[in-house]
Amino acid sequence: MPAELEQLSYVDRFGLGALDAPAGKLRRMIMAENVTKAYWAREASEDWVAWAKDNPEANSLLNQAMKAASNE
Image (cartoon, rainbow, N blue to C red; front, side):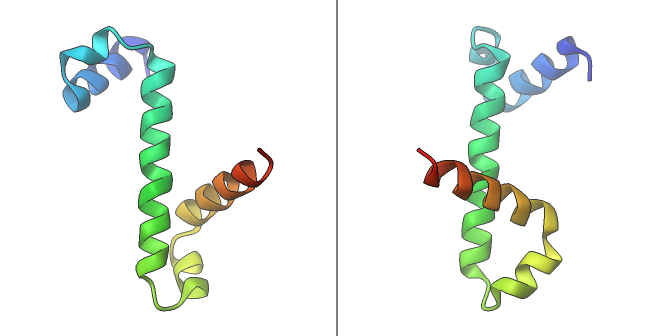
């Protein structure tokens, strides 16, 4: 995605303040939101194994985040 379109998507999502924020910071905020959503979706599931099979991308993201957090 061209940088201008990416910045525009951030403005749509975060408002005009997104123009002053570095794109990397906004990407990290979105990534943190995605990790949080994956965590709570898995927590809400009665079967984590089935959830992982049904949500491979979210499961991978969550596993990467948990691994990164455990290495701190």
